[in-house]
Image (tube, rainbow, N blue to C red; front, side, top):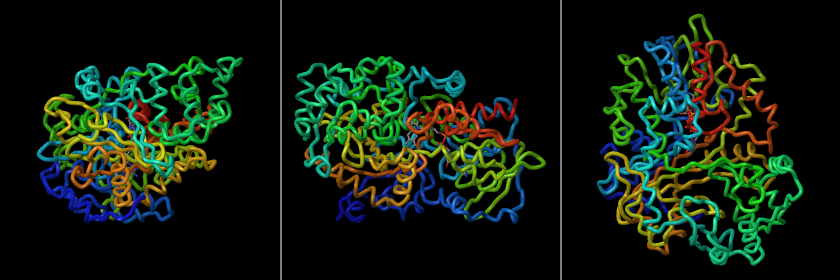
Length: 616
Ligand SMILES: Cc1cc2nc3c(=O)[nH]c(=O)nc-3n(C[C@H](O)[C@H](O)[C@H](O)COP(=O)(O)OP(=O)(O)OC[C@H]3O[C@@H](n4cnc5c(N)ncnc54)[C@H](O)[C@@H]3O)c2cc1C
């Protein structure tokens, strides 16, 4: 981390002409831990340290630390048909499916955060009079062609036609502005600060995919790596050399499933240390951990695996264009508008983008569905009339009852709140160690430096944040920044890993989580300022002048754990996954954790299964 930048520097730089989305002052003073409490009521418009924000996790951590709440003094005040714990996509979908089966059902949804959506969070700004939207977590509808009929059916019920994105996502944007991928080599790791733009391929192709050997050579020639590393990279990308020659497809798969990609490169390619450093973070985006903890079978498009691709049969990728301006927060908002129609006007996937949500409608006795934020479930058990649940809000314990309950919170939380869980089930739930990661949204006054450099994405293998321009999506009245002189959002990603110390994925996730909780907004801000300055400074980027606001979406419990043969025995895992989500009387278990995969369609499918368990 760099030092010497004060909060005052930051505040002075951004206090002018930035208004919060709710029309409140949106000054730099709010971009600080201490100031979050004073933020306006409209949650998507809050900046500073968000995601798992102050006030949202303390009650849960108190349970973890063995200090339960006294729930005996609170009287049971309400009775519902269903209580859902967790207002993420899975919890909201569970409420929706339950009411599909029982249209008169009264439902209470609790969430510990001050906004609904779980990871599917909306970040909203007004900069120089222009509304900017971005996503604080769940980014896109990934591969909708592969979604189950249940998940596709939900999209249809919500009015989402994914074909609409073919026009909404400006697919010519990158070619029109000549923007491509790039790599920032940071001096602390590579000896020199250097931004290298990839001169071939399209922005959509993350991996090297040269048109011809000469342009690949020219590209690699700019890397501040030794001759051996560059020659190796060239061969790994370009040649068909089969390092597993003579093996059957099954033997190849077995080898690659039980070797990390890093170990595969070391063992079969004798990879130079600089090659490994360059590729170390290539798996962050999907796995939130580096190449030392992801099996080579999961990285078929990365260098060195060309000859193995046929055996690995990678899925055909659908274009990555199924994106609302606020990511899958639009799906959460569509669900909430269906559940509580009074919250916002409108009825389409287009008008949800700018629909103004009245948060005062979330928890009202006159609505059959109520969403209660800032409320952490701390105890749930089967009782004479179904279930009883205690939650903590504002430091006080409250108790409610219901006929049924869906726990759509993380698996890791369940052992601390559901005392009826057996030791074996608890152990299986604890195995689902979520991956920590951070999505930062920066509202900037223009993107001229990006245009000047001809880049839309900057990989940063030796540093903290990768960075990219927001996706060029326009829907209904919302328009993506039309040219480089206009405000837009930048998206930065950080995975707090602990690589190459012999730690498995779970151990790295736990270590990273502890680090994230220890980082303040000022820590993030210093690092962002330093790295962006070094990446874009030569093209005229001035942090104080150009950055209007920062929202750090911190997710210590991020991606649901995805088992791999590297660390998990597939046969045993199937049994443990089933055991972890097993129903406890009238308490069913949803969440993407129950499907052991970090995707929106998994969160939806698991909600559907949990509701079926209670209503069939
Ligand atoms: C940064 C990031 C990017 C992602 N990008 C994508 C993407 O592009 N596409 C995709 O398909 N998926 C993506 N995902 C995966 C994402 O997790 C799922 O798509 C989906 O949003 C998960 O929904 P969920 O309801 O299962 O869990 P969550 O969103 O985690 O919701 C669980 C909710 O339970 C609440 N909760 C926990 N404990 C309690 C308690 N005791 N009391 C009350 N409430 C509680 C939490 O506050 C949270 O709101 C991403 C995830 C992250 C973290």
